[in-house]
Image (cartoon, rainbow over all chains, first blue to last red):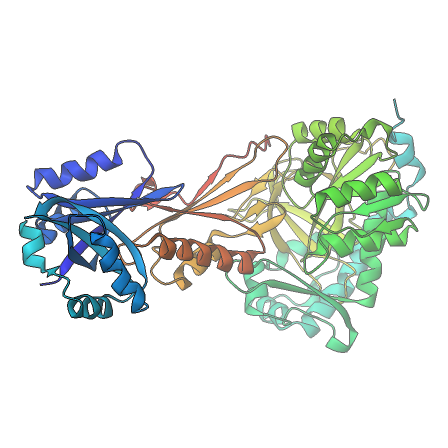
Length: 143
Length: 445
């Protein structure tokens, strides 16, 4: 299973972020990782959740527009240079990273980073070839 | 204090056609109408078809009294006849073509013969003369030159009376003001909102309008109020006059104020006006509000017979103290359709729907918010609800969508509209139907 990220379109209005998170909480959906890309008028809230299907339903019922994208969840050594080495192998392969953000929790001694590149398939190949551990959807959503 | 033109200037510059005794004017109108009705029937398919259907023939029309038996035409007839189907002269005789917004996609196209251009110059020349402009004046024409009739119409009028025209066209405000100051512009033609922008910007640049020779402005192409007039007059130290026109009839010059500023004189020796109740389509009682309908009496390129302008106004009874005997109409107070006029540009909500429909993935739920801050041009924002199909996890894709809508709108309307993406269902719906237009401009009319 692929790692699924949910993006919610939010206007810059008071209380909207609270409403999204509350709608997810009511459904018992846990947020594993989150990041917001903001513009003057709106924000894009990106979420990795425990149950993407339930999350989509909860959001739709609460009147939010959302979409799903596949992202990579990468295990990163929790030490200086851990992230750098991973990004270096993508850079050397000529793959651009659109954005990345870190997980709330850890898997053992390692940090987890959500990574979105312009070409997910190639990024996956390059990372695997460099012995970087990629988490599956099951692993991530159940974390 | 600089001396501003007064009613005497309007009185001194009356052309004989503007001061005809009513019975002579009526005879002239009847005569001209008989000729134009014949011409329209013989050369334009839409008239022939409509009149045949209504069972009326040109022989039944003896004078303007008989106009009510003829069917109306509307902007839709222009659309069906796009591009040249409304022309009554062969293309060899057409010397100029203009276009304005249509209700959907296809613009309204108008053609002029050499003689029509002469008429245009004549009526627009009268318009300027009614504000005291003569061959001694320097007329700065800040209406846009192009398909829009404002620019060339005002130009022909100023040329006709021998004034020196400075064809600055619209935009580039600082250069406009520089020209105004350095050339010693005495008369200004531009939209009322642009007149306000010129005043504000000029003051910011440290200009003293009190010391400039500028003394009169001719403003039209968009709705404006009496309070805007006062603002313009104070800000630019001029007399500000209202002018009315629409490209289907001829462009600017259809009706104009004199320095009495008590209604617009209709050039009714060329354009015969009627005012109807838009529901019953009958004439309203004299002086009552209704929709303005025009019949062109002299144009040969594109004769209009009973064209519904959708503009709401009323006739002003009595004769003007300036001596013009032409009938006066009040400032246009509204529309009978959903057309909006933004910065002088005609905009139909249907055009916006068309653009959104063509941009992939946008929902047809939108709202157009129009605002006017003091001293500013109209601000327009288009709020578009985003559907799940267009939500991207990347900001740049969302911005590309906004940009695409903006560019498409700009290319269709010639108007720059700020696009704002909003959450679904965030646009207020009344009885299930979204409110498409929010006009916050206080036009005070």
